[in-house]
Length: 299
Length: 299
Image: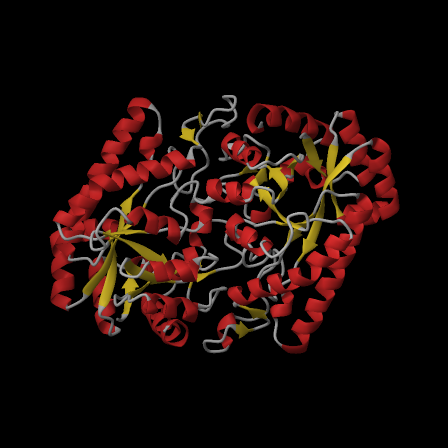
């Protein structure tokens, strides 16, 4: 097991720069993002990590599977587009040799990440759960995720790619992930072999969960990725950027790391930080701080 | 069962004004806040609601029991002060004839509601969970809540007051409540008779919970209060004010209300909104809107 740089932590770096940075700082693994891989070129990205001798601890990210919950033709088409995009993500993960494809499953159908609710107020239609361009049917959205998984898990399995379902903090339930707890993610995994579908344990998203210890134990064999960053308090106005360098927030990492290791996890530990200050800093300084804090607080 | 005004929804109103407003708008119940009751006078407040023929659906709020998790003398004294304050809250609930005393249990020890983390960075002490004036030990904080309950539940029981444990949305875990799910609240109730300790189901806090249906069913006989308001998206910068009028956010109320009723709840349904726009509006207009939305969306 070793420390891995999720490249969104050093967001300004291209794949080539991130690979170079990992090598210079003595890291053995990197987590890549599809947007960055596309900019660099898929084949070129795969060659870069291979030539550098790095493991690809994850590819971020597939998912956003819930728009199919919109009614009628709009929902049907959105579901088809989401499946197509996720098949491409699986193919990319296979070519990169990524340990897993991280899946952020999507929020309420029709609610776009980080944007206000669709036009008008949802109270235009009395008592309806399908109103004003989005759906309030969170249970239905969760069913769409399970349905999509029944298509994507075999596809991934045939290509040797492991899907990693990421429960997100409940504050992201409206717009990013109706998958809100580790327990819920594990239940979604059950129909599939462990090498086809696993879970992400991301400290930011799960630190508060009163069932965390027991669900991490239950996740033995299913933990596809362990990601760390701190939970800032108060959260910034854009809650997406509430992820902080380890030590800057409220999370006690050691007990979570112990539980993840006790559950048999032997993969890399990725540091993934969305934070305006971290993004503005010199990426080499970020890596140096990340390594120090990791040694001090995480393991 | 009937609609109740939680008086924080019309925050500018005194107890006398809220009681008068409820009567004018044909409501049968009101939820009171300790600060407002203290301003009006406890005996006078009790007389006002009694003379108006209103039920007191809840008294808000006791709790903040976790500071005892700070080390040494500081923790011991803080725990004693919290118990004393909660005994007073129980006494007040008894005098008001409140259906329950709502308990917001408190966040990480040393983290003050809505304020930045205590001075300096928590990374000053390597790997320690007790640093820089606050504790990151969320499991320990939860144990302090259980410990306090073992003192307060019998005290409340002797005075005919029902404690209502309120799970808060996980976004409030650092600073307001380490009690984060309905399931966790129910587990805390188990050692006590149902008439001594129950739970609050507040739509804002629990709508996202994938276990909500089963936990509401499990809460049969334990639901001491059902509170409604919507969950705004995106949340405002001060997440405390993310509570909206029903219909203005993402919550589908009808299934939650059905589940609460199916679990045998026969109490009042309180509307509790913390929202700058609602507070700035004419309270009489707020009540009119609240009644209309309640009829349209909640029941």
